[in-house]
Length: 75
Image 1 (cartoon, rainbow, N blue to C red):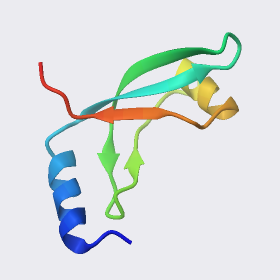
Image 2: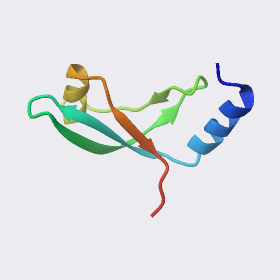
Image 3: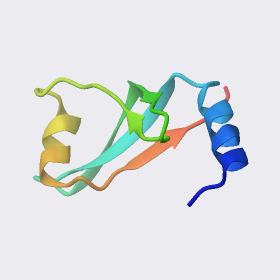
């Protein structure tokens, strides 16, 4: 279980960002695919994002739910 101060630190970090990169695997060609997505966090620190059911990432996630999700970078 994560202690309260760590949760506060994570929440504070996440509030600084609105865009993340999700990487999925194209199960047809077994190649990685990455896409920028807007995201939000829930009180339990779950990450949520939306996408169209026509998108590549949606189709990839249906076949393989393993992802990489990157938050926090600067230009």
